[in-house]
Length: 203
Ligand SMILES: NC(=O)c1ccc[n+]([C@@H]2O[C@H](COP(=O)([O-])OP(=O)(O)OC[C@H]3O[C@@H](n4cnc5c(N)ncnc54)[C@H](OP(=O)(O)O)[C@@H]3O)[C@@H](O)[C@H]2O)c1
Image 1 (cartoon, rainbow, N blue to C red):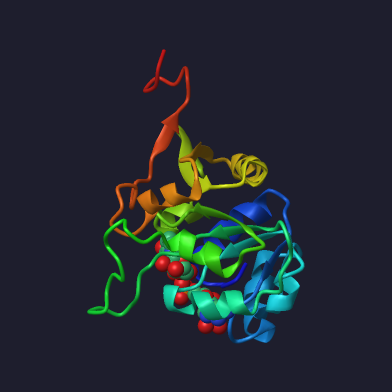
Image 2: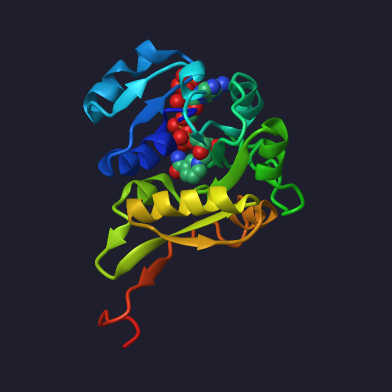
């Protein structure tokens, strides 16, 4: 995890629940994360950006203005998967939204900063508290949209997301991640894929 805030913790909870190890990093350093990782158990640890650089799936979960600095510090690792969960959103208002059109792809910008990585856009269209919930609901699995250009990386991401309990939905190439951006058509869409045979679903 690059970032250890609301979003990083929500995503990490599913990784930890399904037996993955998670390394958190932030700007203030590992000591500031001691309480967090103690609470999350032995599969959670606090590290530096160099420690995160040793992992092969990195989640980018920092605020938009910090993206260039955060990625500049990430050691290169050819072929790694970088899950971009950021939004092009700057707080506080009135700076508000950087780009409400779909003319600039946030993940395409992120990908330009990490040319050795396979970038997958995911999670950013959902709200943190919803991401923190169990993806398996009484009526079906919560949908997780994702987009990316490298098919093997997307298959791996899909398998991990499926293991978390999500119903992963492939939107296609990375450029389609624009649909998830702030004010894009998928923002705030917390969809549930109803299971076949469920009373509310298909017969
Ligand atoms: N929260 C949500 O509901 C939600 C949902 C979807 C998408 N998002 C997106 O996810 C991103 C993170 O949101 P958030 O709510 O999790 O923010 P947050 O709670 O403010 O956490 C941001 C984290 O990023 C870390 N950070 C800042 N600069 C860094 C750097 N240069 N290198 C490494 N770590 C750095 C911060 O560490 P320090 O504390 O040390 O500064 C902090 O741990 C944003 O782009 C947001 O738009 C959020």
